[in-house]
Image 1 (cartoon, rainbow, N blue to C red):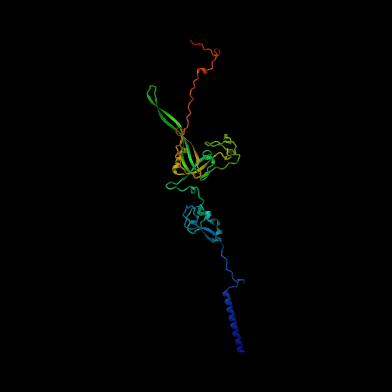
Image 2 (tube, helix red, strand yellow):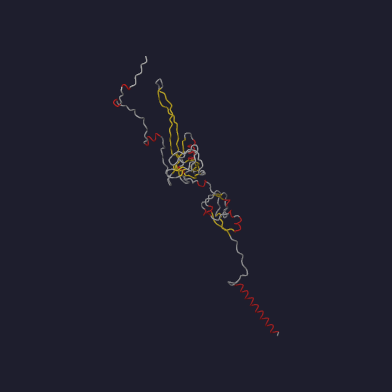
Length: 341
């Protein structure tokens, strides 16, 4: 019996070893497909894509080249949700914005780091060898501003007119027959295109008044007219006068911001402020017209000598022949007055 009991114990040990070996092999091979897993790995936190700086971006940089300057990265969604308004998720949102701080490489571009560009971003770069232009404000009306048909990006010429008083010394004779010089003054008008081919940066129009409100005519402003050219009296109630083509012309004035160099700004400012200046008028150029014309200007003598302007002449006294006179009967002639002794 002892030997049989030992045999049974030996067989049990061998069987236990085989079972242990099978379990080890099973665990090494992994869980077969379709069976329930005893342990599930934890899922990773969701992320959000944000815009970062690809390289260090200096302050006052206009973000026109977003491909070179900007890139993307992912951050945990919990971090993004803590302040979602601080981040940008598309580089197109940053196009043409201006940085107000330096943004380090690989750092997120935050809302506090950029602002929308002002008018200065619209001022064109300087041409080779030329100074860069600046924004100059000019007030215009329906007549001086090409009937409000000027838009941003158009190019205009600036015309100005002056009333000029000139003094001359004319030789003459005094009562004794001697030669003397007489001082005479002559007042004439002259017109010239003083600035050519300047860009319109911005058009600032006043707020549109509700229909039916009174529209008084400001001092120095061109009067408003109706369809037939009849003057609209100041203070009358109008909804807007229309010209022959059907376009609406609203009486009033507005501001144009022109791209001028300092020299051009000085000329235009002088033309507005000097005594004798009688008005500034703009001429709208066609798209793509960059020609600079060498003009003579216009005065009365130039129109006569160079452009054939005829001068009016006084009427020649007419001499009637005796036969052309109508005879009058003697009885119808008035009596001669009695001669005074």
